[in-house]
Image 1 (tube, rainbow, N blue to C red):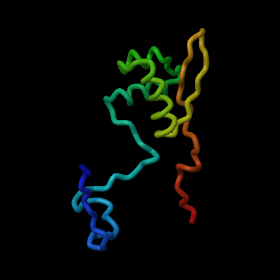
Image 2: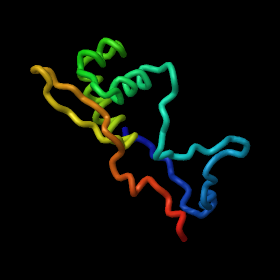
Image 3: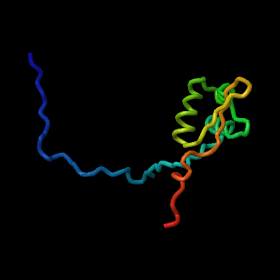
Image 4: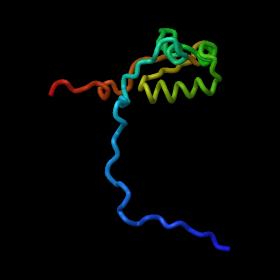
Length: 116
């Protein structure tokens, strides 16, 4: 027995116009290059540790956030470096790797040109 196939409409009866970006009454979300971390979150506490002059080790970040080691490493690469665009410096201090936020990458890219 052969399966019966449904025929799709071939005419232009379907609406093909552009779709609206968002529904009415709902605010659109803008991508922010200067995303500020919310207070009292695991990410904000981790960023505060990384912004300190001493920096933070993976173990210190694990203890503060409760994350596992691979999650802390993913946070440093994915959130801190890529999404927030912050420069992270790492160096060995007494045989332990310490990470510290030194500033922003592409500072000229993030600033808007107001001298038009």
